[in-house]
Image (tube, rainbow, N blue to C red; front, side):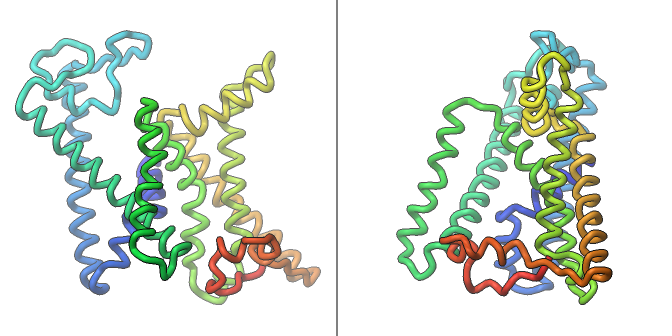
Length: 296
């Protein structure tokens, strides 16, 4: 299930799509994709294998209530310790410094790609035809909330968890939109995609609330369960599985109901964007050059 989390985040990552649009051609894109895939598999394998070595070497403290509890995201550095005592590892060797530098490079390269992707998307959409200075200012503006978040010393993995959960809820409906055939276009519409994403999001909330329900505190249970589902679930596999299954169920439910209404009653609704288009300013946000949306 966890690969689904990473796959979903990648589908919605502007960093990845930048490289797709910038590729020289289909052949270059395929070769680059294979090389990137192999390199990613090797890096992930080595990092995961380091965690197995840390467990085998008995330098992991599993007790979450213990002051020496080992952060699961730092198992790699446990292998680089100069002794077998429990507790967080401290960099005390050249190889540890080298690994930290590589981790920083990886993080900065990912952040740079995200910044460029967001800035390019916003600039191309809202600042079309403007001087390049507007794009540079956009990069600075994007970094303001990032810097504020970093200075607040929040858990960045919780932020990634929120985005991964949202992406997991929406990936299957969006990928089904690639079903480019007369049948696919008639079954998978913008309304079915939005509905299935909403069903997945609400189901994840309900699942979290159910797992943290306290009969003596209804409002507190709702707040705690929702927060746990989206921020504090520590990447528990069942929440991602619920998100994927709920999105598929939502899509199938909409398709069945829509087809029954269409075939038996002759009713075919309009697309969501057709309704939102009446809202002032929506045409700017949706880009008027876009083709009219399909019906419901």
